[in-house]
Amino acid sequence: MDAVLKKRCHRNKLCNHDSQDWAHGCPQPTEIPAKLKASLCKTLDARGDDEVQSAAIATSFPDVTSPVRTKLKHVNMSAGGGEVSLGDGGASAHSPPSQPWLPNLTDLLKSCRLQNNYSPLKIVRASYQYMYDDTNLEYLDCVNSVAHVGHCHPAVVKAASVSMESAVTSCGWEIDYGDLQYPKELHQFLPTCLNTFLFCNSGSEAVDLALQLSRLYTNGTDAIVVDNAFHGSIDSVHQLSPKVFKCNNIIQPDWVHTVAMPDLYRGPYQEDDPLAVEKYIADARDMIDKARHYGRKIACFIAEPMLTVPGCIIPPNTWLQGMYRMVREFGGLCIADEVQTSLGRVGSHFWSFQAQGVTPDILIIGKSVGNGYPMASVVTSREVAALLGERIKEYQCTKMMNAVGCAVLEVLQQEHLMGSASVVGSVLKDELLKLQQKHEYIGQVRGKGLMFGIEIVWSKQSKKPSKEIADHIVFDNQRAGTGVSLCVGLLGYRRSRLTKAHRYKQG
Image (cartoon, rainbow, N blue to C red; front, side, top):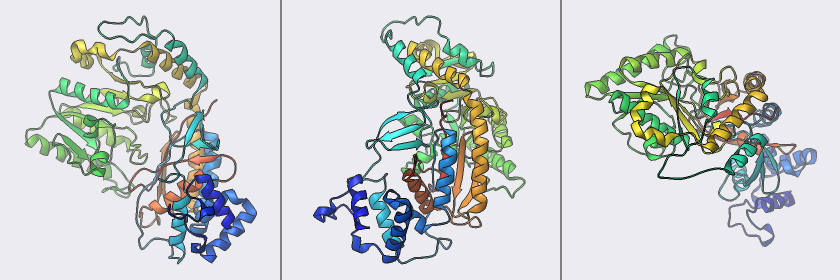
């Protein structure tokens, strides 16, 4: 057993057991309780030393981690890539029974886990739905939502390479890129009123531009956002992101107004309340009335049609429809942030706003349109875009954007990836619902297409979020021990939500 621990620590480059150097926090063999050691040794005999970490997890929560690992691994291999997130929560009255050796088990996991300060996961290359670390270990990518048609897809790589050979970058005069096809091709998937494309280098820049446009059009200054939302990483966009100013103790700007997230699972109004949606909208109306009373003018309401960052929460259709009507009633524009949810990811529709039965005044799409190439776009009407005046020339589609964007659209259609998202997503959801029925720790499964959220709780009755169990599931999937490992992450309420925003598999 000690030899196995040495092997794992040498592999993760945490410390040198031969020199008896424990300075980096690796537990000494004498600290491993006999009960845990016997259980791990028994498991190693059956499954091999590579599964020592997942065996430790299964020992702690035997009814959760191993079945979840097996099922998720099987289904995700069929689905392609994806993204997973989890939540935060402390010990409670609903925690698993106390065991005297559990603290030492926690030390063991912290010392050998992949995602920590001592041994970070080092990804060196990727292909389609797989990533590879510096030891050539293969991971199924359930985190990245940017490589929309797969990492390094040959068609996208070729288009970028060929276009780069004749790329022109120059300041001081206009560049004639000729007749670019990408805006025309993308417009075929959009409502006719969204007919003007303004191209940027990132989703964050696109959000900033959308805010500018809404202020120019309405002469208002204020924005309505959804609680726990995240819209980008530049300063102006941080101010539209409650998740950022909550986590960093930043004072919310007076021009930003936050409405409650329509979370029917653990929000203020839940699914057992038949008037829940009406109450969420009524609260939002009260907030707007209060802002107007103090002389504020609403410029825009910005939201993801599917709230991915808080844990893939799908608002009831009537909520988003009601919010759009109310904001327009008060003279504001409605902005759909589709950086995470666009291009067929929800399976049933090309855009998630279509699945909600609404049409935004401004649409934001991010780097997934270029499969990771730095391009994004604000799509709006000619009337709104014209307010930029001469500045509109700053947001042209370049030759590189045109080539890469067309390649991504071509792959989406030739490989029938939207249909694949619907079919595979249906199978995945069925399997996840079966797991929910089986395990007390899965509070809710929700999702559409290849985007899913899983609530990890101490018990279904309490709904108490469990970061601890979520951590175990994430870590166990990274070191599955057989075949490909799963690379998953943590997001959502107290980081206790597994969320999946899958990439597509080739074919």
